[in-house]
Length: 427
Image 1 (cartoon, rainbow, N blue to C red):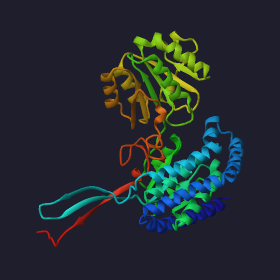
Image 2 (cartoon, rainbow, N blue to C red; image 1 turned 120 degrees about the horizontal axis):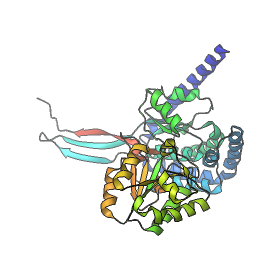
Image 3 (cartoon, rainbow, N blue to C red; image 1 turned 30 degrees about the vertical axis):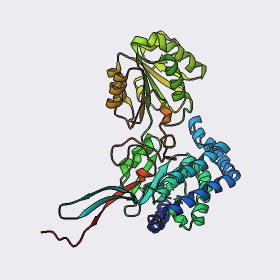
Image 4 (cartoon, rainbow, N blue to C red; image 1 turned 180 degrees about the horizontal axis):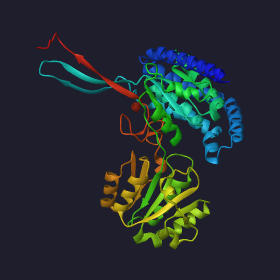
């Protein structure tokens, strides 16, 4: 039995090495591809997604049955499920990426030295990007499109539950690449459900230039601990909405319900509600009524529970939890300082919002909250590359290096220095 496992991992090692070498060869071409070629590939891929909608839905139905057999929770099933509307949104997302300016070969800066040397900082692709994500087939299209727009090659490793959907989507992307005269190896899907493939990707130094994990804490933790390749991290979305004492009640109710209940399974959904004690008696009851009517479970501190008996007792763990479900934690705070302190201690540095008419409080919140995205009087569900005008996103980076916030095409580039001389030599 032991030798069989070794043989299997050896086969996966060889398979992943082959994928990596094909990606590097393809990158040599995509890095030099014109914007017109890249855009043509995406336009044709969008058309293929629409033309092959029935095939994609059939593959997705098989994935859903497989996922149900593994007893995935409702939030995971929701993220996995495709319908005509979501496929159309994928196609439209590709077309939006086409409208973006080419992020490659942009002159970012230029200056002249006293010796006459002209220096430029110019944007270039990152290289070969390895993207490891859970069972969200929409990420397959978004990640591949953004990588290609930025001149990169991509190796995609999806969750085991969405591999058939992703294969059907990749086939459409390959149609676009062929139509544009670009190598289909520029977008490759790891063709196995075996988790050993993830371990291989994390050690493919020289073949993969950067790893982007998109998923829950366990996936990100594994990637961070095991990867020998630099990563752009996407941690969980324990997002907060804070209702300040000078908030407009109607606005607070509208924004909070959208932030929590529009789609509970996305990383930008609000998971924790903070309310100033001074207005809690007025604001919490109508908010609790709306949340209860939407079948949202409420877990709160002792002060909030005194104001509404439907709120159950929150544990210490609740303040740190990304539910991805119709559950919200509720805490009453003294002021903006306590709200900021709570968010910085318990949040995941993703997205936070303050609802207030007081600009002084808003500025303090926006300046001092240590998250990738901070908002004033808006739903946290706007934490999305498409809503930022990026066309799509690979994820929301909660790290500090290279990219922070939505990772779109521009964030998938780096730069080099180009120097123009006229025969200068150094003394």
